[in-house]
Length: 442
Image 1 (tube, rainbow, N blue to C red):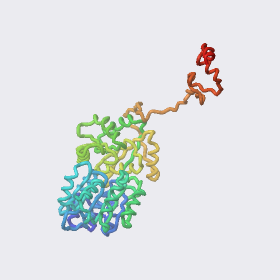
Image 2 (cartoon, rainbow, N blue to C red; image 1 turned 90 degrees about the vertical axis):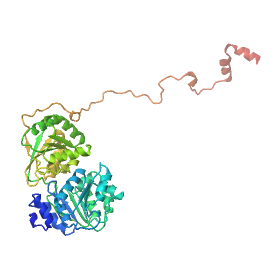
Image 3 (cartoon, rainbow, N blue to C red; image 1 turned 30 degrees about the horizontal axis):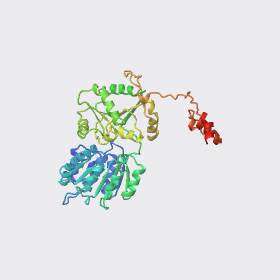
Image 4 (cartoon, helix red, strand yellow; image 1 turned 180 degrees about the horizontal axis):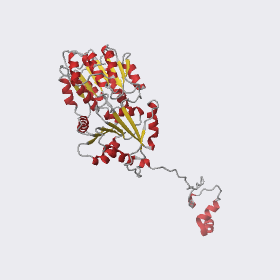
């Protein structure tokens, strides 16, 4: 379906054309008519399928001017990067209208954000904790919210935002339209929907676990961590890897991988991002990568939810994720907007179980195995986690002490006996050789 064929107002049509968008993605086609009908929506779609525009278009298309500053549209997302991304897309789509979008998130001062909301926010985008703080402190009124959008809800539940989300939803008007979007459908999401949504219609772009068709997947068997570093350096030197997103599973690993490969690049050509970096560092990294100034970005899974770049040439899984669904999220960062993409996964012997779970999730689709390039040095140096462990038999046998026995002889005065002693014996012991004299005198 073409965007021209949708029932969009003239301002949105002009903005969509200015953004170079012509044909709607599957999730956008299926969401638009349901959302426009006023029904609640539960959208299941993988990363990179256009979910942001899928919910922004119908919400903004039905927005109507009203007096006052309270927001009509509330969008809840898990990360500050995603807040910024959604706000940027919303402002581009609403260009030419009086719609104002404001984003709020934790990690920075609350006062400037409260002032920005007070100046007017038709669309309010934020993380659950900061939104709840602003509402409870009286900086934000939710009385006029007509549409609630919850994006990346699976990630929010994974991060432990269930309580904040519930409290926030309880403060919203009962009469509202709810739109929920997630890459996976879990029991926790179903509970959330049953509690706060009104019989939503499910729209789905692709079955969960289905790999994106325009992504060419590769798997390379790598014996250990240091060989992974050597392989990563080799791949990043290849000219066709023009914009590369490298996924790692932890903050510590992001720091370590960056330290080991950064010397291969010029300043500003590579960076890393995770939740422990400062606000300015995270924004600088995301913006530099999105604008093409930076060629390589090393990222953890959580913050990568806020990276929306349409021309990522390669995704490299330095290690396989613990949750198999996360693999789909990762590779979905390439091959976007109908472009071809390439994903490369490193798999060590310690990760074979994770690989099996990923392939099972993808309907037993086996990731094609590629040979290790001959130019890559295979290291024999192992990390502590990779070192083999041996169970040694305990040959030292301790001699058990006999119960009830002291380890030393008791002193004479502490010895206890059970025999009778006559008075004469005691007297003899007391007076010794003078006992006879004592007896005569007595």
